[in-house]
Image 1 (cartoon, helix red, strand yellow):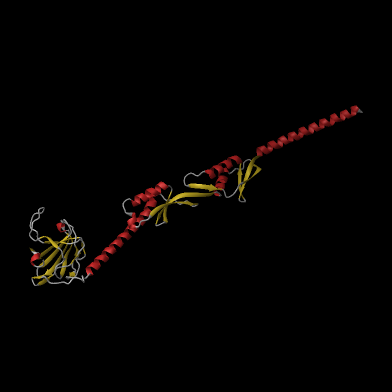
Image 2: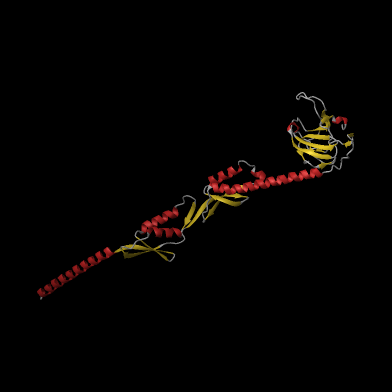
Length: 345
């Protein structure tokens, strides 16, 4: 009986061993077939979208992390908006994986915030550049040849953070800002010119109500009045220690800016700067009589203007060949200088 049992065990042991061999051999064959035809890969999914397959999850995660931590250039910081999911699968060996495309897709889900430097005019951003140094150079260049405070060119720099990187080159930014600079200068000059013209017009129309025009002399039938009141500092025909030649007029010293009126009604024939006379006004009174008003600080009259003894034609100054504020007055008859003291002072 024992012999029969032993034989039975041996028989079935051999059968089991044989079956195991067949199973292992079959498994090996199947494994080889699978290995030859298929390969393991991770299917990547983010925000519910399947992006494709990759072979190495660790490499992808490492590159994804490096991208998020990269704050070079104008990047201020980056943050994830979604977490990728991975599922290991067997795919056909000839199926291409998409590491680069999937990495780009993951990067596209990252929110990037950029740091830029905006140049402002009157607090409003007009241009953005990459670096603070570029912004400073632009501002310094634009301010270099003007008095920015005087003309109201309020230009500054602010640091800004944005998720939409739109930069200009330093030259492009300078061109944009220079347009504002020119506009500010133009507006300032126009305002100053308007003020000047307004002052001139007011001076031209001004009537010296406190002054009673009295005839203090006549020449060629024309009644004459004093153009200013003051002290005579140099008489007609006198010589100066530092000048040569005869003095063809009369110097009346008074404070700078004192209004000057003509000695008689007439027509303005000259209103400009003229050599040693400085700012000069000449009035033709008719009958060959002309009067000269020199060294003026400002000229209000214009050529061709009709004036009378109440019209402010200029103001006392010290332009041209002058040592102090005074009116150099000349009276000429047919081009020949006459002594003003004989008729006025």
